[in-house]
Length: 331
Image (tube, helix red, strand yellow):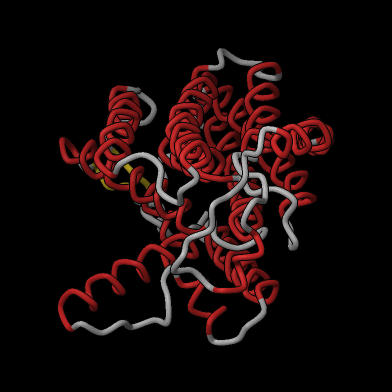
């Protein structure tokens, strides 16, 4: 375990260093955030804060993951490519927002098509891998559920849903980075158990692949810890869609490769609550002409009820920690 603690520390320090270099550069290029006109009035002061800061933690994540891989690196490569793919979608979305000075970037159909391509590729890879296939582990049981040919559409739905839910969670200083930090640390623990089980079952190659994935999740944990130094309230930089879509890709890849996509509603419960709040809000307004929440996603509802931003973030991180502890009970 010492090597993984070392990876967390190195990733943390590299992210801190990269922040010192990149944040002034982003300011110089005037890559500032354009705040939504319909958002909380308290957010107007955040306009102009550098965005696209996801680069600060994604670069250490990818470099360390590729350089520290000790096995054949197959699963790590898949996780890195998935993260990179969604990161690029977010980057182009952020770039359009910055250049055109507006709060909307890529068109909805452009995002969906791009996300579908990556999600289908990851789902097909998992389906064809002999150690993953079409079976998923059912939470709180030792049972598996073979989804058969339905695995691919279900996996694609889960991947895209997760990525966009993580994106919706990125709305307050330190919220998405803090919640995902807790989740990535939890996935590192789950991976360590997975390595032991694979080794005991005589699946040496699978154990190697999971060991490599621990490097990925440990690097992600350290990078997010370092990024919080700059993203905690008051944020010096925002991760932007570059960061949030990249994080969604990373969490999705880990869940699919571990065969635990059905566990996402538990450890990713905060993400799910944010997404459901938006769905309910839109559905209620279209059907009844009334809103359920003061504003969606859910974190804005609590803000508009008078709760300080820092308290909302703390509350959501506590919820994420509790849900992750529940997840560990299902191992």
